[in-house]
Image 1 (cartoon, rainbow, N blue to C red):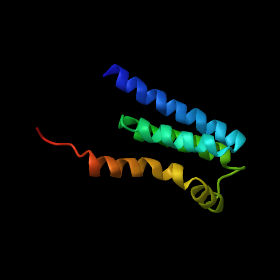
Image 2 (image 1 turned 180 degrees about the vertical axis):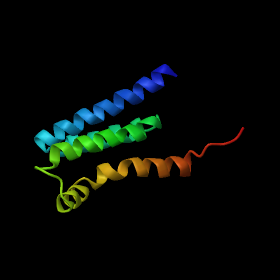
Image 3 (image 1 turned 135 degrees about the vertical axis):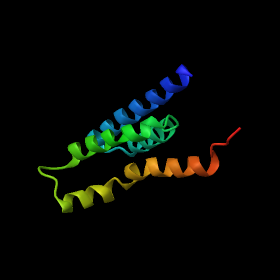
Length: 102
């Protein structure tokens, strides 16, 4: 069990590191890698909630000056994939790996 949790944490922080690299270099490889790492890290369900900190980091790095409604809409459009990945994971997990009462 410990190795499973550690692997999920490793993937989560790898995804965060790749996201920060993407924000610095704008190379698609880092963006795709970050999305994949975040997606697979969500097998540890508590990381779905911790992802809110990553979103706050994304807003902090990308918001120029104060955050207005207009800049928030631009950020949502620009990073929709990052905002949707936890919801997509949750829906797929519930659809294909629904918990059973045994």
